[in-house]
Image 1 (spheres, protein in one colour):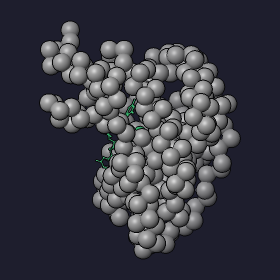
Image 2 (image 1 turned 90 degrees about the horizontal axis):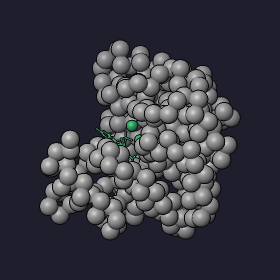
Image 3 (image 1 turned 135 degrees about the vertical axis):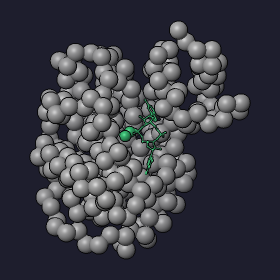
Image 4 (image 1 turned 180 degrees about the horizontal axis):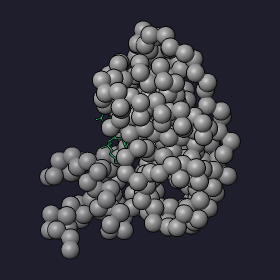
Length: 280
Ligand code: C2E
Ligand code: CA
Ligand code: CA
């Protein structure tokens, strides 16, 4: 049974979605090799006049449970693709990362829908990475089919929150991911805790062995970034680099970041092998 507070929230959320009162913030991800901007991850936001700011961890599950997730996904993707066109026009060149609910993968035509949206807005599919967490309910064989069709269309696929939840090594081997994101749980205490550091290092080596790009999320300190750089991690994302930003703040942030980057890290301990360009 749905709690009364949830009914009220659901109703407000549905109206916000229909009336265009959600918005997107964009969090940069930068290369640990040279500090350059690799992508921005779109993160949805909802502020209700009465309820205040509600985190996506609250309203995304509500949308999933009550049949609003497809609408949310399509609104979010359209908004993000349009923003990419605006950034290109301003001379800001970046790839995009977009979170999708596992439920979207249950629709067999989802890859076609994403491709159609990219075409309609004139965004090359190769500029888009979809971030997935576990939880798809379809059988593995269908999931492999859906994700493979995404890859054939040129869309990148990241496994999000790796290391917590149910993401398994078997999935890593069988599903055609191009990127792995190490959950911030392991990043948090890696500079002090030998076991977390070992886990980070092992995940990075494992992912590279499988031809995946590795992104560390939740990087908040220089010590964390230094360690990840020493271990050969490819990309960093987190408050040390930037908090999620309004669309029109990204270009200004990047100017500041390019000035800050050169003095931030000691030289990399060893220039470990970069991952192959993914051909999976
Ligand atoms: P996620 O994909 O793992 O996103 C990263 C979350 O970590 C974001 O929270 C971000 O604001 C936060 N974060 C970024 N850097 C740091 C850091 O250095 N330290 C800490 N402590 N946190 C950091 P947010 O925006 O509240 O999003 C939460 C989750 O909601 C996301 O987790 C994602 O799973 C989901 N989500 C967000 N936007 C969308 C969307 O448009 N569609 C769908 N389906 N899910 C979304
Ligand atoms: Ca994500
Ligand atoms: Ca994540």
